[in-house]
Image (tube, rainbow, N blue to C red; front, side):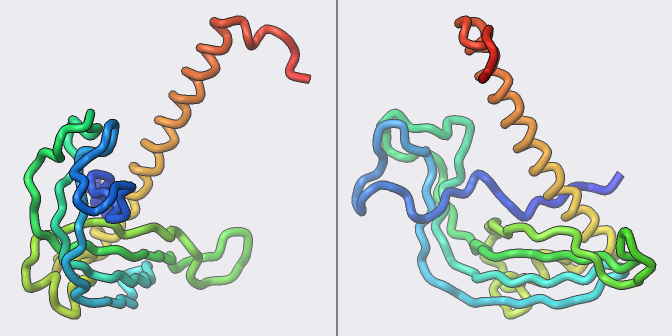
Length: 188
């Protein structure tokens, strides 16, 4: 089975936190932070890898990041966790697959996936260079086709996990309503 590669890291908060400058935290705020230091580049990628055609772009920022941990909500305490200076990639990735277009006899590229890139890496030279995005996505892999498949699997896994969590919340809400007798009569 192909490994999963994730290019969206949900442990990184957006830098627009709803707290004023100088406030460490507020009651029930996320216990993490992202502070941009400077923009260090904008990368583009346009490559064909096997049957995949990939387009990607991302802005790179040098950022001080405290990743969310197990205690991701704060009760008013100062933010805990280790602050790390990392390169934050913010962008998107679009993947097409070459083959027969579904429902037709035409050969060509069919749209497969468009997703966000939101991930931080250590500030190594390879990520700071103009090929930083390429190194992030392909990582000098000996089998770049397999790497693209692993990225697709990573995005699908995150999508499935998000849907499953929403389904559980919906079911729990329905169950609570039924237990309170709110779901006994007709809807209309």
